[in-house]
Length: 344
Ligand SMILES: Nc1nc2c(ncn2[C@@H]2O[C@H](COP(=O)(O)OP(=O)(O)OP(=O)(O)O)[C@@H](O)[C@H]2O)c(=O)[nH]1
Ligand SMILES: [Zn+2]
Image (cartoon, rainbow, N blue to C red; front, side, top):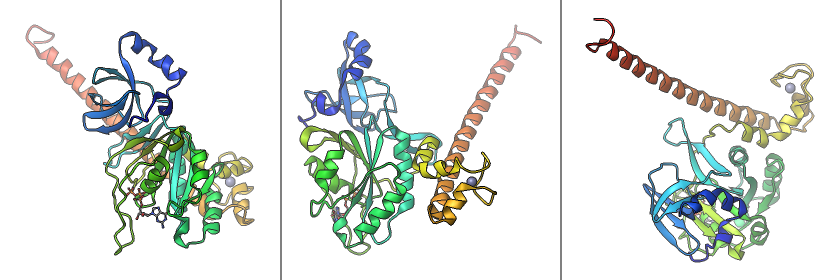
């Protein structure tokens, strides 16, 4: 990992500025390349060292201030890829920090999973990073032209790049798009690790799929941050995202459906629900074949899901507040009931 110089890691004058107070305090900067429970690996430019941390929200991609081998502080994140926690608790889970490009990986198959592409694009936009769609396995025999057409239709303002890690086609075009800190997101088995190996030259030990079900197995066991070939940046390989729930991603969803929003601006009513109101520009576009009906459905579904997640967060905050109030009442009562205080 000696190739992880501060240049390649993305250290710049803005990071230097935000680190300056820590430098004055004798701390050293580093970037987290992997996180385990209570421990992480930090690239310091000279080496990659094991460090301890007590904060729970250290994440791969974070810039940190080290005191020896202890993470003293995490520098404020510029961007963060967050999903709703898999465990069902209502806080978000940060998958990667300070990401510049989120590559949404979709394999070329007979059925292109447009819903997943849309969901991942919303997640990508919400992170603050630039999304790009990578169509993998173009050697599979499925219709590549059709796949590109479908994906281009849902990836508004986003480049779609066809690749085959097997034949090598498209990899140069992809590499040219990937600068800074790049993260690959996509279902297990879509070819993320294979792509990551091709882009970084690292052997990520891809295991073959089981012939029986043809599905990729969940083989990525740890997050890593690796230097891209050509020294243009680094790549974070996250474990397969099986269920990606949206967490507080209203803006990301709106960005992912900018085409629908642009149409909606022309609806007669400002609060048009696009379900039969007169003068609905969205419905008119669907009727004229300019907008796929599934696209509006998909937009609604993701909005509903996001609102539901937000409501759950609100409910948690409310119950935390109630618990706090109850304990204050108890303290208050106890004070009153103590001998020498208040009523007898
Ligand atoms: N035909 C073809 N197969 C590929 C290509 N890239 C990857 N594969 C195969 O797809 C399977 C899954 O690839 P991985 O790279 O492990 O997929 P992944 O997305 O990293 O999966 P997880 O680690 O589980 O998240 C492997 O059997 C690869 O050999 C490609 O370009 N063409
Ligand atoms: Zn409307």
